[in-house]
Image: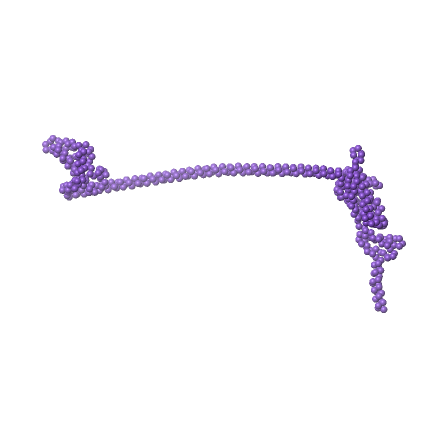
Length: 451
């Protein structure tokens, strides 16, 4: 009994989930599951979720709900006219990318499953490229070159089969252009090419069960646009060069102005330096003049002091010499007086005999000089004729004797050293008085004159 219960529980826990799992199927995100029943009904399941399917009773198909990206390379001619209305098309190349996806309604999903996803992936891509490229070429044929390249004032262009209430507005070339799925006015949409392509291919995409999400115009190329671009680039380059030249000229002017200011400052600095140098030179000259005056004053003071010192020295030397001479003369005079006194004392003490003795000692020394002097002398003797007077010869002899005695006395004094320096006053000690001297004889009243 327990085993039977266990088997039942195992069947309930294992078999029933397996049966239920066989009836349910996972629907991944980005996929759509279509389940068709035997009675002809179709149920659509959008992932992520579960789809109910019964083997042998249902048939399931999985579709991709992801967006499909298609790259377009469209080349065609525009609808340009010349001034006379003659067509003058311009070849234009448009590079774009379109994004489409499966519609949201069950009818469009069924249509896409039957008409689009029933084909291979290569066929699907070729269908989309052909459909979008043909719509793009028709749009290019309906637009002018300026409408493709930022012709804001271009008239609205309607796609074939569209009502005139949808207006178009061109935008700048090369800009990214997106298509809004809803019906928009001229102010809301900014690219006539994208609007025309969307309007032109929307019906064909609907027939395939697809919807148009967006159209991005990558590049719009043409020889005219390239020429205009080169012209604009040249103009921009020329303008840039003009601006650069103006900037360079302004920079050069600013540099020259700065250099001029610097030059002016340098000139002012040099002038200031020269003025300072002149002031310094003047001050130096005044200093040199003051130094010269100072040196002259010092020299004058030195010379005056030296002259004063020399004069004082000479004065002192003269005073010393005079004092020395006075002392010498005084000493000589005192010595002479002392010698005379001593001679007199000696004469007084020795009497006539001492005097004669000294005369005899000195006679050999003075005799030659006296003889020579007498030989050169011319004597004139004048005698008085009175009674008792001596004759001329006696008077002459007496005079000569008196002279010799005087000379001998002087010689005695000189030889005795009593009259030091007396010989300088009268000449050589052995020389008698010159011929012009006058000698007075002893009191006989007779005058004698030598010549």
